[in-house]
Length: 442
Ligand code: NAP
Image 1 (cartoon, rainbow, N blue to C red):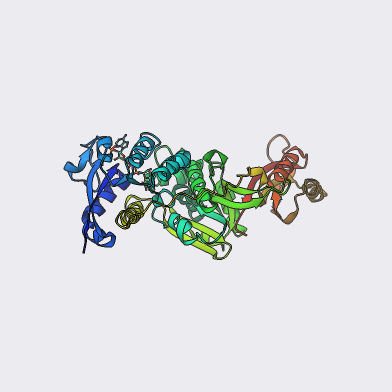
Image 2 (image 1 turned 120 degrees about the vertical axis):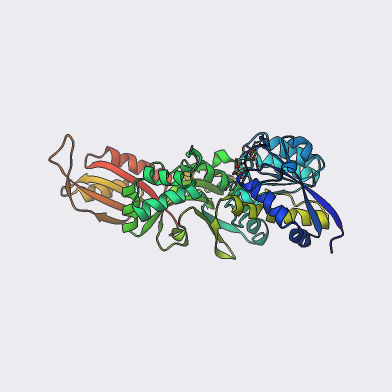
């Protein structure tokens, strides 16, 4: 039995996600109202072009180009326009007019999150953003609520579906990066300009959001170390598979202590890495996303599912809508974003991890010993060496026989690794440093 007044919902954006949110809200309004205890009235949808075709269609009388008027008088504003402006200005207007806000805008949160959360806290409003990371996958609320009594140690995430699709094609179909990207574009998994995905910008925005939430501290986007997948080759992916690994673009955040300075901090980074083919993240195929989380008491947890898609993402938005609406009905101020910990964010040089280095070397007696000593001179300990069949090098030194060495290391710092790779590059027994990949998830 609903006794509370209808809540006025304003939707900013009627694109891939917005049109699905409008459609689901109109179709399931009564059921959602029963879950909330108040009617949810969609009062309008702000778009740029009222005449544009939308899938699913939005009733024409709801469409407007006047977002500002729509925001005024709304109880809950859902921002699904994307981009930094005018989304930021509209969200601030909504908060300052007393509305709760729901957004799926990771770029905006990673860039202006602290400003928006601060504005919400000042007026006791709530900013919900479950859809901003991992599309349909519940990860924000589990971090904010379910794990609020635990201590998160580490998160390894596959949070970009486009790059996972590409790497998966390279692994399972033997495609080159270019072929896999072309297929991703054809199937609608990659945008016309795929830079944000393949260069790791999208994943970096998401890991900044996850790290801030998991470690109760502000992690600015420019403190996230970022490497994309554009240098990954078919050979690297196939030889990884032979050695029992899979290449994934990982978004990683963790608590760590800098070995040199003893500073305790958090690290947030994105790069392609090898993970054992037995790791749960290795089984994440296609454009799916997953977040693998290790907490002190809970142990390992994995959240898996569709990381994008209009209707899938709309599910997360509507979950936020039900939460926001319930808060209106129950009353009380919003819960502020908890960034009390103020833990320093450490640079990539503080990170220690394992590496797999592939070298083309002269196939001569004593070469292995010389390479091993280069590693030990730079305090990088070798765990395993595999050597492939010798070949005859081409180029200027056409008669020199070469062999391929794949060297796995124990944990080492990024700084030690960089110095080792530079020394290998200079060494006269190394014909080429073919590939350097980090190994995670061991
Ligand atoms: P989209 O398809 O490009 O839709 C954007 C909508 O916003 C369009 O309806 C557009 O109007 C409207 N819009 C843009 N600028 C406007 C302005 N200045 N004034 C009024 N309306 C404006 O975007 P989307 O894919 O739905 O994504 C929306 C948000 O969800 C983004 O922040 C995105 O990162 C996030 N997200 C998307 C997905 C996904 O799978 N698509 C997944 C997770 C998160 P017109 O239609 O008239 O052009």
